[in-house]
View 1 (tube, rainbow, N blue to C red):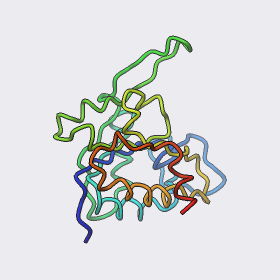
View 2: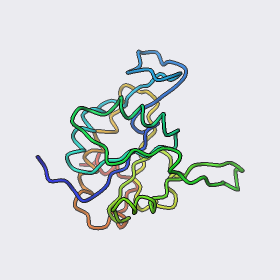
View 3: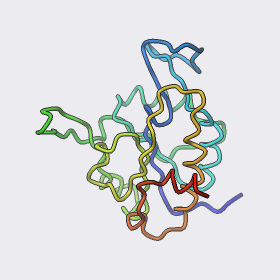
View 4: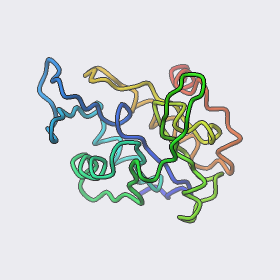
Length: 184
């Protein structure tokens, strides 16, 4: 078994690990939760099982706490444990004055209370505004909207392994990470 990194890997839920919709897609969902048809990103089971041997894992979503807890139960492989599962109540509401809208931001300074320095935290999200204040920690992933041919997690896994031993995650340029992996 590989040695675990000292890094905390925080994963977003909707459009990162799963796609949940009230209107079913043209194929059978992986499961249903309340009014939602839920489609897991291709390779999710294997990704979670494998990446959990390298990093401490958490989920942080801006969806309701109950929704997040229930969905995470459904997607967690056997013998895998989450360090933390956070939902909307742990986010900070922010206002975009240009668009006159509100959004929920994931402020990583809240995670420091769990024993991780900012230099040790990687957050994977499809929405840049959700981790705007901690962009140095963010790896942005293409949104998953149910495409059964999606292979993003395969590339993400390989990329995350390149960050495993980095002493300060914030010093690494992460824009264009997928193209780096395609060029390998």
